[in-house]
Amino acid sequence: MAKERVFSGVQPTGNIHLGNYLGALKQFVELQDEAECLYCVVDMHAITVPQDPKELREHVLDVASLYMAVGLDPKKAILFVQSEVSGHAELGWILNCSSYTGELSRMTQFKAKNKGRESAPTGLFTYPVLMAADILLYDTNVVPVGNDQKQHIELCRDLALRVNHRFPDTFVVPEGRFMKSGARIMSLDDPTSKMSKSAENIHSRISLLDTDAKIKKSIMRATTDSDMTIRFDPENKPGVSNLLTIYSALSGMSIPEVEAKFDGAGYGDLKKSLVTVTQEALTPIRDRFDQIRHSSELDDILDDGAARARALAEPVLDRVKEHFGIGRLK
Ligand code: AQP
Image (cartoon, rainbow, N blue to C red; front, top):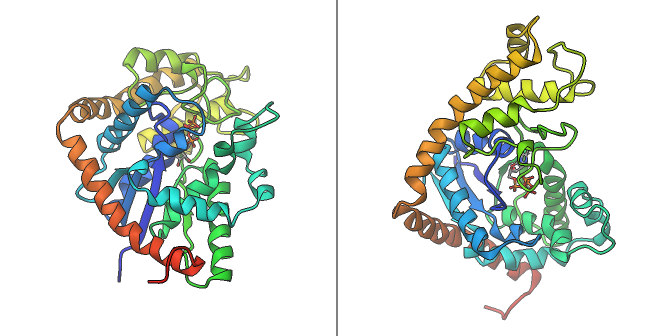
């Protein structure tokens, strides 16, 4: 039986944080041994909000290096940069013509990012359509993502089904794959919003490249509550529950095991222990990143990845164009 095809991506909008890692990248690594995987640095998504051009290019290489530093192997998975495969933009346009402004204006991430503005950048509005194109371009079966992307995956499926209804067998309809633990890591300073690369306060997140001192500072000042009991209760104790989730995902212990470990202890004890667990988990990633980031093979790996991705995208795009009647008769 043919292997399932897996696609996912990360935006080069800053350094990958614990949310990206625990919600998405850990799954990427798990899947590379059992499926045909494509993992992309989605730089065209990044420009939906203004980016410094020089920094953006650095971040593209940072994210690609972090992919490998967390354990992705370019011999097993195709690692590439989105803008180097033009089919993403082409299919994005075709799908824009099959989507509705009504459904896009219901996307909660759009609403959150556009908060307070009367007029939105069009790219930010149509971002989920480009994401659907990324996925559908490769006849993807499975999309490993964090919980925050559930609505976008649903939209992708709706678009695929809508096109298939009009033009049968155009797209493979993909499924989302979500982690049991760590699918939604919350901000350390405001545990009611998700941990995010672009949040202003650097102590709201732990980046995979943070120093031990920064890890300590961010965790020790994380928001908790005044109740003093260490209990997993996301609704009433979002801050403590978030720390327990991170602890569990990094240590491999279940949440009840972590609760039992800290039974009767104070928040300071939980935080101190979480600092150690986090530092131990991130030190080897940081070390591998340093080896890869300025190595000569990084460019070769991304060139090879883009060539392999193009070869998979081409027949799908040809099929889509044929079904839509785009281009001359062949
Ligand atoms: N807090 C999170 N918890 C669990 N998973 C998360 N992901 C993002 N934040 C969390 C997952 O990480 C993958 C890559 O995300 P992305 O870079 O494509 O975009 P994003 O979801 O918008 O992530 P950020 O960090 O919040 O970036 P900015 O601030 O630039 O918008 C996705 O699979 C996502 O689900």
